[in-house]
Amino acid sequence: MNRIELREVSKRYGKKSVLDGLNITVRQGEIYGLIGKNGAGKTTLFKTILGLTEIQGGRVSIDGETTPAGLRKARRKIGFFIGGNFFEYLSAEENLRFYCGVKGIRDTAEIGRVLALVGLSGVKSKFGAFSLGMRQRLGIANAMLGKPEILLLDEPVNGLDPEGIAEMRALFRKLAAEEGCTILLSSHILGELEHTADRFGILENGTLVREIARTELRSEADDCVSLRVSDLERAKRVLQAAGIRICGREENGQSLEDYYFSLTGGRKDA
Image (cartoon, rainbow, N blue to C red):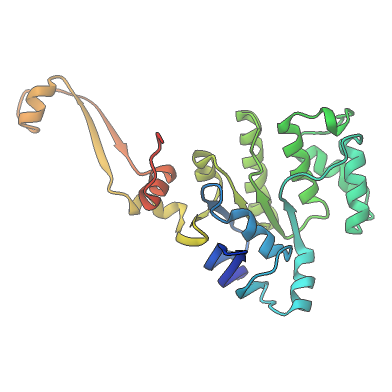
């Protein structure tokens, strides 16, 4: 089942095209990782799905709904984190209590549940004193209020330390595996995204360059074998000559980062 589909979606700001005939599909229960440099159209894509920006062409479908009324109903199933809009003078709990009211969530136990999931239980300080990592955690907690069936997360692990990133990765995978939650997220940390998402969409200049599953990354690559030998010069001349002792062997596949730069023509050291 496809939960989100965009077909030939176009969006312009003045004369600048931000989304250009974009096609994307996010399936039920998967974690879909969106990749692209700043300005590639990732945040506009999220806003398009949420109905926060109007498109000039194409079609958006959520759970098969395409009409304005149907999309409004389907969007109630979505929790999202696109930047943080919290009150500096309120605590994490107080901010979430406000958003429970906005979202019509009457079960106040939801606040404790989501704070525990993101590691903010018992934090009494005001939001204004939060580190960037804590702010990100609260944004993720807010997105999870009410147990939405779909999560849209724009750079959710930005500012988290390695331990925090690993915790969020485990949380996202648990939500998808155990609760069937469908997650669309973006990240600049491609190495982490590779271990988190099931499929990836590479976005460049408002178009989808490629969709690929994590399991397909290795088959797309030209695998190579690295050999450590006792005599490099002799090995260069005759790779299989007798008397050359092989000291080690490593198999190297293509990483998500390698694959991204091979498609976009970018450089990792740029």
